[in-house]
Length: 381
Ligand SMILES: [Zn+2]
Ligand SMILES: [Zn+2]
Image (tube, rainbow, N blue to C red; front, side):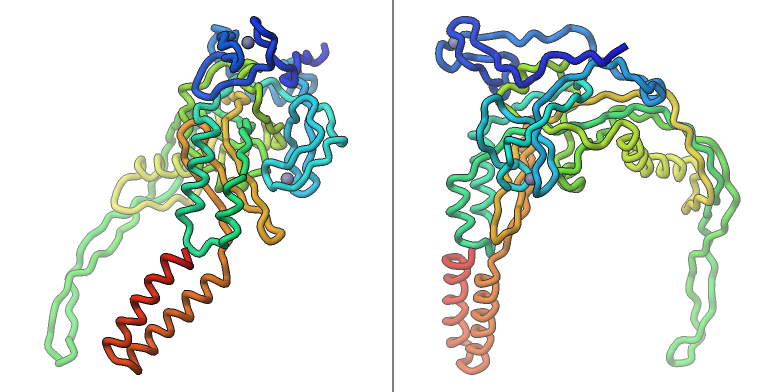
């Protein structure tokens, strides 16, 4: 029993007509040659996307699941492990913008993805979104807008685990029922008044609830803060296709750092709010309290999948900032620097406007206000 190492996605795909190097064109399901226009179909298996049984997978010391080999380089600055294109001599890390030491590249064996969500948004469209986003920022350093002119976007397939499970949760708690009481009191003038107060009567409650979870997504990498990755959701997972190396041609891939087991712990956290809300519904009444609960996770299955993200990492004042686009929907999430000079300028001008109203009356104030608004749009934006 040995690991089956499949062909590496590092390999290039030559055009069947002219031999040119083919890259996957977002939005398509084929490799179209940019030199001779020949359509090179991607061979995709017709088999349904298989999910693996979680318990038997993690209890197997030697795993017979298919692996793929990829040549990766680790970023010394942020720790991201990404694939390299064949024959690259120099590259920057897509996650933080630091230069990569390509000589340190190593071969990693990773679990072959079962499925992939191919890129749909083209780089051109992504760059336009990036530029629009930069232009829309208030109080951004002027240098940033200039920098965005020649900023590159990297197309990156991010590793994810998805989990399915049917959960059975036993619980004990209380159901709260509201009732109203009339209370007498004396008002400030010493008159006798009445008012109605809502109180809660608590009754013990217990039961068992069941939930079914389908495709709970967990990012299998630390290279993006989890909140950023979550901000790219939702993904159109019903469009997943069986994995084929060709979809990765021309794009980078990150290897997973969070294993199947660690990933499932994260999946449990994502399931928790749904389980709690099911218990609340089961308890009913006006208010609910849960004292104790215990969940069994049954029929756990999982798969390894790749999702497409356009990334731009730019460095400004020794700090790195990231801009991300969901490669399917175009949903944008960005980090931005602020210009302290512009903010200070705006505050000082604002104070001058107030001073002008105070000293120069309405007309002096209005004049300064107009100057302030002009400055705001012309300089500070
Ligand atoms: Zn060709
Ligand atoms: Zn990095």
